Amino acid sequence: MKTTRLEAFSDGVIAIIITIMVLELKVPHDTSLGSLLEMWPVFFSYALSFITVAIYWMNHHHLIHMVRRIDSGVMWANMGFLFVLSLLPFATAYLGENHGARLAVAVYGLVTTACGIAYYALRHAVACQTRDEPKLQELHRCMLRKNRLAAGIHLLAVSLVFVSTWLSLAILMLPAAMYFIPDKQVEKLIGETE
Image (cartoon, rainbow, N blue to C red):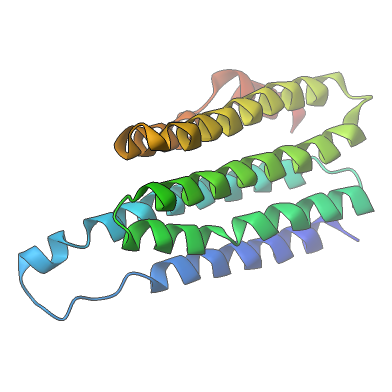
């Protein structure tokens, strides 16, 4: 199988995930500003999830271009990643509809943790193919470290949900900020490998 086929399939699944999430944004029947302001939890959860999916999509795009061959390990790791990412629309809707309730924040945090772990497994499967390429191995080491940190932050947010849901939500935003801000070392390594 060519990497383009895997990438096209993944792009399609990710596009469907974003479409499902946006369909949860229901238009209020009241035309007052107050009715729009009441929707802030739903919009917040959508925006956070959209940014999360966008970051995964961009990183997935770069990662798939490093694949040397599509073997069963890469295919199954990719399917596992897409499976847990496909749970994000449910967690997003649940969080938005329940206005930051403890269980809703915990479910959202667990799903984002699972996404991070699944993406880590995918990166590891790809990294195993490039053992003889020092620059790619260095790139994978940097990114695997960042992936572990992000998953740890998500787990921390889940564990703090019983202390403060707002603190937990704030912590859940950290990995998105972490990936949103370009990592100069990673950008340099990507430039050297292309």
